[in-house]
Image 1 (cartoon, one colour):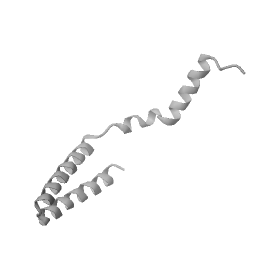
Image 2: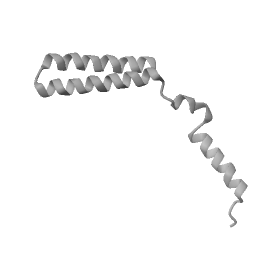
Image 3: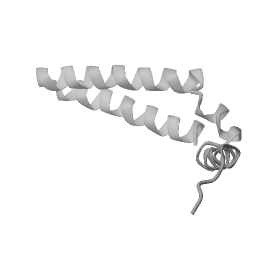
Image 4: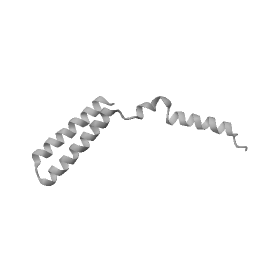
Length: 80
């Protein structure tokens, strides 16, 4: 049994790469600034929620938890 030539390997690699990482999806992998902002705000709200939980202030835990939920829903709605 003979091994395929170098050009055959390149064609196979190109075909496999096209299946797993198509050129049309490359631009979709870039994160938009709006999504970055929502992620940053969600992390900041998570930090505030954690600090309020440590202090035992359940009102602020509820406020920050609501903010996290709103930002998560908004991110899902805007960026499917």
